[in-house]
Image (tube, rainbow, N blue to C red; front, side, top):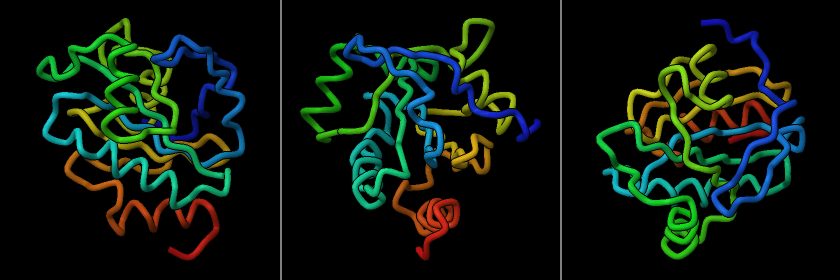
Amino acid sequence: MNNQINFPYQETVSTVSGEKLALSSLEGKVLLVVNTASRCGFTGQYGDLQALQERFSAGLFQVIALPTNDFAWQEPLSDSEIGSFCENNYAVTYPVLAKSTSRGKKKSVLFAFIADTLGSPVWNFDKYLISATGEAKRRFLPPVSPLSSAVIEAISEELGQKA
């Protein structure tokens, strides 16, 4: 794994609402990229991710959700259903990207970056911390809460703040 590969800012991706998101709009921000699913034991972390987004709301931090159906078919919903689920159950305001694949030859550009830098997801709600300069910094496994001291301290460090 090589954490010197930079985040694919030149790419454009789709959200669950069908809007295009230029990843260049995220340049200069610390990112927490998370593979998600609506029918997982860790699904409640959507709410924790929202709380984390609100905690670091100064515009220099961004959560990005990447739904997949790769692990035990725990994301059966369509993109529009995922969007409604996230909004209605967790009041999510961070970008939720269109459902994609995290493994194999058809994995999305973001999962290709993740796999090449910090390793492919092992389950839903793997969390990947990306620096403001686009370097993959840390990985937090699914059981680690987004609100854990380890995650908050790592984000704070990347932002140059005290936790």
